[in-house]
Length: 153
Image (cartoon, rainbow, N blue to C red):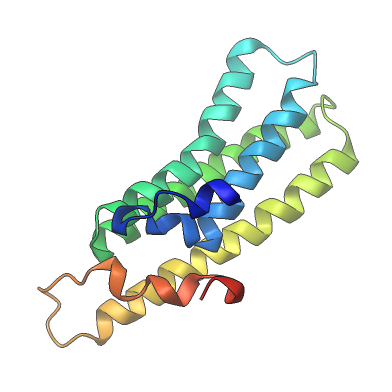
């Protein structure tokens, strides 16, 4: 966490978002677990790692694009990657390659992140709709503070 406190600027504000932090943690969780499963092909492991890394990457990219509409678009891509990763992990569980305890822990973390990302997106859509002119696109910076953890405000 201390690395997130260094070298701050306006473009790195996504590091304070709980959804981004949880996405990074879910990547770490999946990577550590998948690396210890021997009977998964290199290609499948790569696809699993790519899909889960895509989540935090798209949250960051959408935030750095600076406009709510683009942020919503990239958050939707992140949600798609979450769904892709869930499908991959579930397929491994369903075929007996990973254990039920591992899957249940993953599922709980995944579910929490998925719901936070959905709420984050809905709140941005609500703010965008509340503006008088839909033609204007409002900057993400105006609303990002609403998604910080309490201790970071």
